[in-house]
Length: 214
Image (cartoon, rainbow, N blue to C red; front, side, top):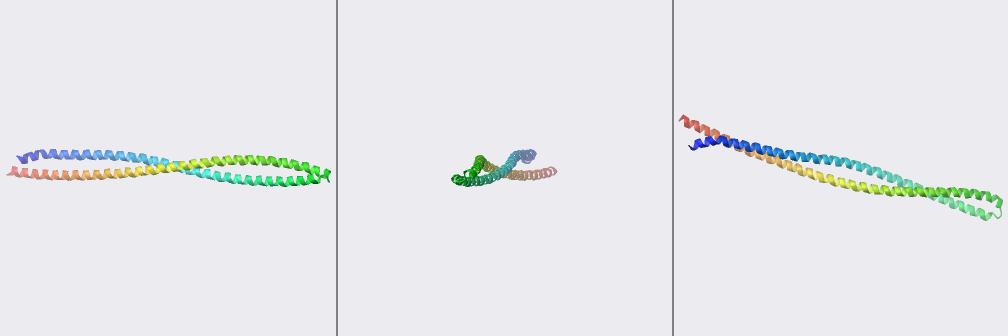
């Protein structure tokens, strides 16, 4: 009687084990798909941030180049300004010398004085123009410095985001590996249980045949 009960419920036990194995496998697959989707999203974000980082680095390089060019132009303008001021000082000295000597040669020096006054007026206009250009370059330099600082800050923030996302990717990879390991372990256990159930079924079937034959 006990053997008949065992033989009767054994197929049901086998079916239950197969159902459990299928359910665990599907649940594990669903979790793996979810983890893979999250990993794909993070990888896409990393790719976008890396592109933004490349653009920021290019903008930073362009800004640095423009800043260096502006500094060089500013230095050149300052050199020209100093040269103009020196020339003005030399001409002023020459004019004053001529004025001092004009008492002796008023007629000869007056023409030169007028010419020098005209030259000095033009040079002073050039000085004002150069000073305005230098002021404009100083403003440009300050703007470029601010832009450089902003780009550096954005680049640092971008690097921090990429580092965070790389950590998320590593965590997701680790989670996926754990899920896969858990799935393999569950499948192995269920396979063992199924094999045991099959063996028991075979033994029970053999015993039943033996009893029937007797």
